Length: 340
Image (cartoon, rainbow, N blue to C red):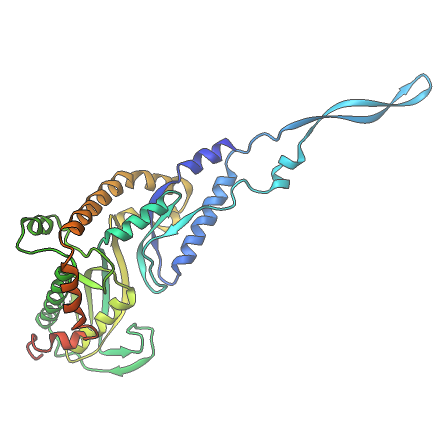
């Protein structure tokens, strides 16, 4: 199966798909593996090898029917596809930062050697971006609009300016935490250069951090935010919506979490369900190869430099952040926000 093996060798790298809501990430991964295996096994089949056999046959002779041996070519049954089964039965497909069942958006996967690149992306601590939709006036047990209703509140007093002030405080407190975790001396030229390049980020796993947050749409009771963050979960983003509602002396539930960027991959790079096939995935891997390589080298080299020159900053950051561990958004902002 030369064609299948050649196609298989080109399946090495990273690609992104668009995960629809209501489907688990592991289900998406399994579906992609099934589709790719089916296509690989449907490519041009090799010719089944033949073997020479001497088969007994009867012929008419002078004395009647006589038994003789006839040279015959027969297929080697052990090599026949119906006997040995499909050529490809497994593909090593790894999942990047997963999306929970309710969420949708960019979902990065690695196939073959791409699984190593997934590890590199994790170690690079790249930011991800989401659009998050909220609805004022409700509170549920899981912060989503599908959870069990706990409370209904008014929201007529909420204005766009009040929402913007809350978002500014959230970004400010998270920015301070980001600087502490990043092991960067802010008085150095290195800190300035990293800030210009957008490479200030933690060197290790941290609590969720929001690097940027802004309001895209405000039409009460509905609103939409764009959030850029690190080490987040989608449930954490829903909780942010809930806490924004509380800060505005109301309540809010999250109606949608949609990832629009994961590291180097954006919605433009994410293959929709109708394009989940061998050719499109192979093209996606090829198109993203250079971008991923350059981006990872840039991010990981920054981490290597920072890790050598700022070893004792970790202890300072850890002690300061432990002092605020368990503090809610309400506690962090109660002295900074004008009463709504």
